[in-house]
Image 1: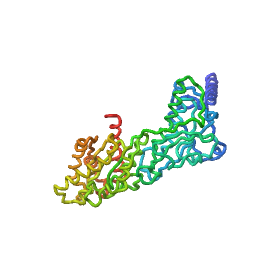
Image 2: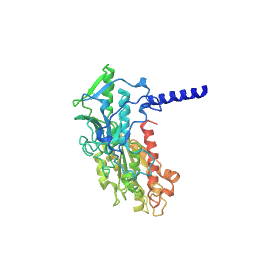
Image 3: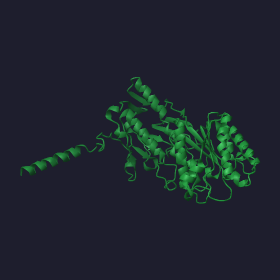
Image 4: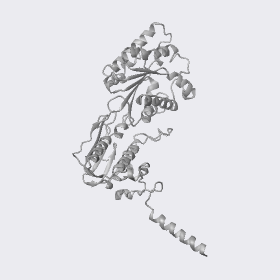
Length: 428
């Protein structure tokens, strides 16, 4: 009987403890700050409110005590509302990588605010919540206070007050040629928009100020130093062989992999050659004109032209060697005329599994000579063996028409090039 009474008392204590700790984070034991969503949103059954998974893991002693408000309104009254993804989820369904970048940016912002203030704000997609009075808007949301996609320069970021709403955003990639603007939005700009505010808050707290209100007089519009990458080439660069070139071409995939700090521009044009004497030469294209106009912004340029050269000149006499090399010199001189810091990464022709002469060994031998030739001209250059990579790592199964990679082939190329760029960025 005593054992039974003891078990009943123990169960009562456990139930009381569970009821009292209902608002605690079951993972860390931290008590989550209570947040509010507009009454209209509460009535919407499909509203999805998320909190950054990593924010509650911050130990209490590392959370600062800044009392932050927005035009006098306490930060805790706000909801972070982020723009819907610009990517079609069905088109990108084969990818396992995350591409809902505005959500990632919003959650990162919530985490950063939590570290400064101890207030953890909810993050909600703009299409899943009614318009509220106090919102922090991330990206080109459907709210009237947000700027449209084509409003600003891609390198310009801003955090500004519009009424009681704080707007965080940037321009989209409106200058270089990239095709459909909804696929060319530069997420890196928006990702770094809050950096200026972060610096301001750090400076304020270092001065011993513990209470701060962001106002309309606060100017956080700055230029961001993105790592810009030009992808110069023919149909393989443009995305032929993929199911959706704006999404699946290797430059598009590369841009998504490196979305936080890089701007990757697809300057490929199908059927084009390096040689100026051939009728389909690259230097007569819209992409080439854009390359010349915006050349000063690029940090890296992938150069992969030559597959079509050997197709249009299948005999390839010795005199063709100099024509190819001279044309390459002319193209790179234009790229580096106002930008001596750019690194030109020469890539030889990918593996060709057909027999019509495309991507011949003669052209690949000339491509291998280009980096040292460019270096002699004072141009920083290097070489990536795309032929060997596609032959040994990508394989014929991912070149269904024998010439162009499919979605998987493009993705594999992008993954390898992303590793190369990250090694360049950190000096290794």
